[in-house]
Image (cartoon, rainbow, N blue to C red; front, side):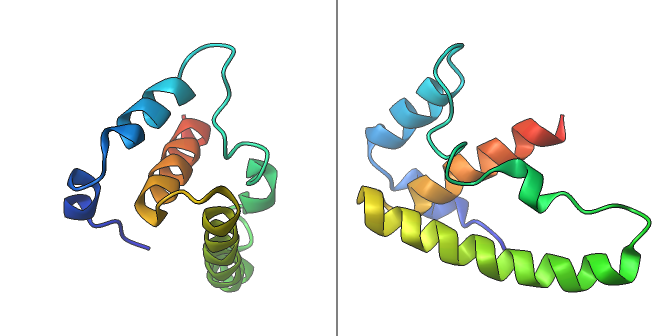
Length: 92
C-alpha cells in the first residue's frame, strides 16, 4: 500500500492536530484500540506463510481502515496517516 503524499498536503489542519496529539504522553493514538498491533506480527522463519499472510492482512487492514473511516467520519488520508504512524511506532 502506498500513500500519496500530495493528498496529505491538501488535508486540513485537523490532520496536524490529530497527528501531533497522538504522540503526546498519556494520550494514545486513536487507532491503537481499533488496530491492535499483535495481529500483524509475522515470524521471520515462516517466509512462505508470511507472503500469504501479508496479502490477507493487507486486505483485512484496508477493510478495517475503511470501516474506521465510516465510523469516525474522518478522511481516508487522515486515517491512513494515523495507521502508518502507529505502524512505524511499533517498528522501533
